[in-house]
Length: 185
Image (cartoon, rainbow, N blue to C red; front, side, top):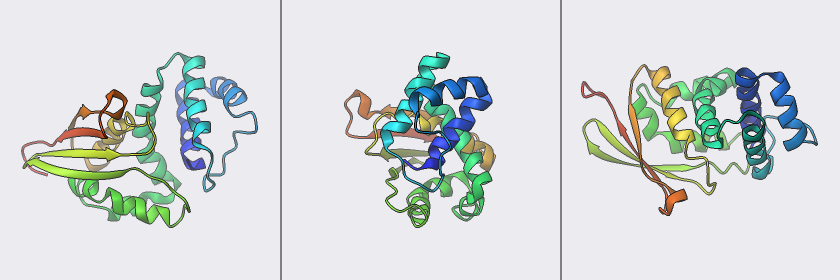
């Protein structure tokens, strides 16, 4: 994963648990340094070590950290200069979701070797989408819940998200049912 993810994790931990907690987590999980180059790739196991160590230090479950990271991610990437990309990806939450693969393809131009998840969508009813979340990384699917809260705030559209299937419980890939308000998309 790229340093941008690890930097966001650092910001999340410091904002919720303080600098001392981050210093302890970094000392254990990233002994070679926690001053991440946001544009550089890092081994995935570093990010997962940070998450596991954060759990050990704070008592917060790893899934909860991943969920919180998702919510933070929307505003964090906006503040890091990706707001324009988010703006052109869609005028509504519905349209933005349908363009996620394109967004990741554009981001990949700046991040060589980026291995983002991919998404497929099924329209269930006029106000429901089934999101198929496909990723080579196990354990990051809780991020979808946080991402959807962050995106809901950005687009001022409340949605409900329900997990229908998960690779951690034997499914081929994760699936989420996203329900929009009946008044429209």
